[in-house]
Image (spheres, helix red, strand yellow):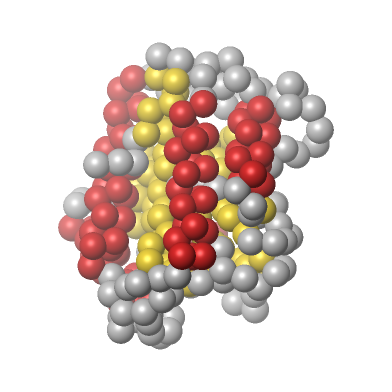
Length: 252
């Protein structure tokens, strides 16, 4: 496994790309309302990101057709925008990537559509709280497997399950690179595998299921749901390891 260590000026390039994603997510969070279609959400995100000077990096990536992953209700990740109309009480995962001057940014939120149930508020809170918890405990010398184990424990302690076989990832001059960072301990010993070092830049993205962690890919070959068929949530930030701890790049 080869994990690239970024120089400070390279991290600033990644910060610029990530800031555009953060601003676009904030714009959508403030403007997406019941009655809009998922395609309208996608266009709003696409247009806004482009207006900030970046390219929507998901469009065409591995064949994905749109700029924004719109994951509605039970879809955990990779939802394709369509004519589905958002209604009060839905929850919507929005995942966006950018490319600016050859550098990439990536982040995601799950947002309420109008007023939602307490159950769904708790579900969304789990993914967001897990993400910020994971960022807070990162330190130089920690192993990635230790981080994955801590993420899994946090999710399970909340009464949920992490989606398996999908994970966080490195980012830089490519949208996805080493390391892979599962939200669960994979292949045994947490004290094995690569260590976190200053200069590493990666995306953490807790994907929360209610009862079953096994994924099912729908007929569109993109949308991922849990085997339990229940609602789910997803949050993501791009972070850089600077002076021994993680700093969020994808925030305003």
